[in-house]
Image 1 (tube, rainbow, N blue to C red):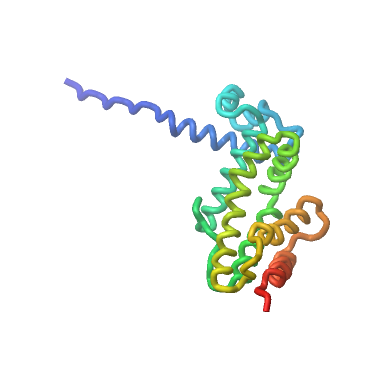
Image 2 (cartoon, rainbow, N blue to C red):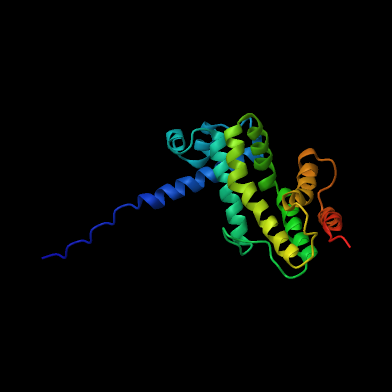
Length: 210
């Protein structure tokens, strides 16, 4: 009597879906970087990812929604590669200027990275004409990052390093606003030296009044 063959394991649908989702994200980011947002299509993403376009439409209503989720996934993976997680805060070494320069320099590196530049510009442009997409991009990515800055400044204010009457939300915009303005409009080189100068100027204005 021959031994019975072991039963084949059932396909893992969740793993298959994750592979497809990852392929779609990679395809969307690659196409936007290579051809631009306007020439990127759902059909092109599907062909590049090796999936049917109905698979994409089952999960996302538009190419903008695909790109947004792909970009959020890219940002999360980049954060993990740097040793962070979803709850990463700006480090508090006791030196506010050094901590802010560290994170702004990392932002400069990210914005100068072609993998981030093209999809970020595409989302920024599309968010202007699609308010719902713009609001989701702000809520899912920008607001959490801005809150990290606010919490770091709150800690500095508690130590007496910042004027107690300073509006911390405006203070954050003094730090990150010029950086993104220069990147978006290409008004000058985006460098670590520029990031450091922003921190120095902003903290000079935020210093406690004597």
